[in-house]
Amino acid sequence: MALQEKDHLEDHLAADRVAHGDHLTGTDINEHIGKVDFKMLVDEDKCTGCGLCEAFCPVEVFEMQEGNDGKRVPVAVGIEKCWGCETCTGQCPENALRLVGSADSSFLAGREKAQPLSQEKHDEYAEWASVLKDVLGLRWHVVGIHLLPKGAPVPDVPIPEERYRYCQSLMAARRGRSMMMPANRHACPDGTSILGLTPIPAKLASGELYILFHKLDSVEAAQRMVRERPMLEPRSIDATIVFPLDDAPVDPQVVAVIAKPEQVMWLCMAASYYTGHRFDFHASGYNAQCVETTLLPYSTGEPNISFGCYGCRASSDIGDEYMFMGIPVDMMPTVVKGLRELSKKAIPQSRDKIYLPPLKM
Image 1 (cartoon, rainbow, N blue to C red):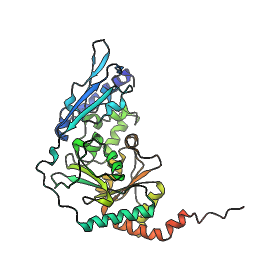
Image 2: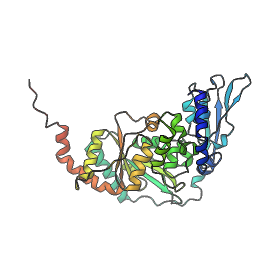
Image 3: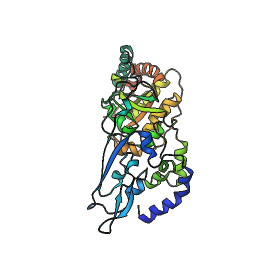
Image 4: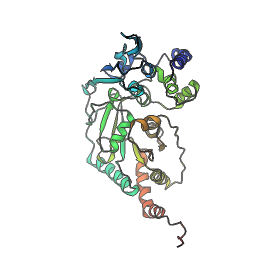
């Protein structure tokens, strides 16, 4: 983006920033996600002074200043605001930025510990996972999701040293890793605000970043997208917990399946097997894993599908041929039972292509 275009956008959005003054700006960010210490390293030999890091930073860490040789360089004048999302490093065309940091572990201090999951429940969830994996022919683990309510007892689940986007944590869970992420382990301010860990930063609420990313045509379109997506009450959730369902450490609230369209089709049929009900799925291509795979099933009690979004496909190893389905846990007994019935005849016959005409030799 040219500097003139960036300056024009900032002028256009000035009024909107004022209107969104109730959203997180400045040092409020780290007050809401927990203490995090970051250092931004700038390779001035590589830096061209383009200003994209300043423009794309959701929390306004950077200020472009004149360096010793007269070249504009980014200075992290507000490093205490830094969220650790690394949007700046991702947008730097010369790879001139490197973010290093560490977060404290005070999340667990003084917290009541949750009772271990009963063996009966553990076995039930493992059975569900086995049926889905065997009948559908899934390559990876089925994923359990639990949004830990504010102040709730904390289960025994590892907190990663790394910072992840929520969609990245789901991809890790499908490969067998369990993790609990309080806000200071999340690397995406969109996901944390949607899932109720934090309020939304002003640059996201105004729609500015979506225009900078060229994801939507206008500020008005970006603001409508943000306005129409569901969000949990800020700070109502203390952590996201994801895990392979066959080794659940806590009760899942949503079960996520990463699969091919044909496999998701059978899940939809299994959910409708006893009622014939058609579901109204909501998908947009924006905020896929946090909204579509997780929050909608969590809040509505209905399953939902997702095709993924720019963020999750850019930052995870999900293949182009895969999509997602989130199933509220209360529906899982019906889905598993329906899938077992479909596996007796419908699924093998369909996969055997029994309706194809005989081949002529």
